[in-house]
Length: 161
Image 1 (cartoon, rainbow, N blue to C red):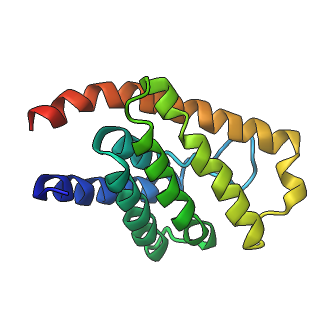
Image 2: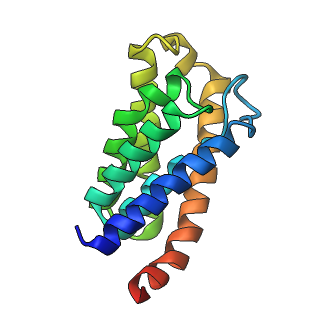
């Protein structure tokens, strides 16, 4: 990994943390107590633009720092490994069309759910609830739209830099 890529990773991990501080105030209207975790898109965007190693590092470092911050909570701690894997999967999908690559956000959400159930943070029967599924679907649609808009805008900037 080049010095430039390390700098990008640091900036993007910091962006993940900053967004993590903000999104805690954006409730998911369909799931009581849940948020729209837009900070997750930073990991996917990083993977799609800079590759699997950078995506993994932003997922790992960004989530760890955010978990240790004032916005941190048990859910964020449980998401460290899922977000790292999500970054890797996005990096592996970077040659795919952007919308298909954006769908790697589903990897993060699915692994988060598994981690939350294992950690006892989410009852398994809640996952099958219609409200939960609809709220998760809403969040995925928002994430995919954001990623599909941001990646084509950032790719030329990062190539030129």
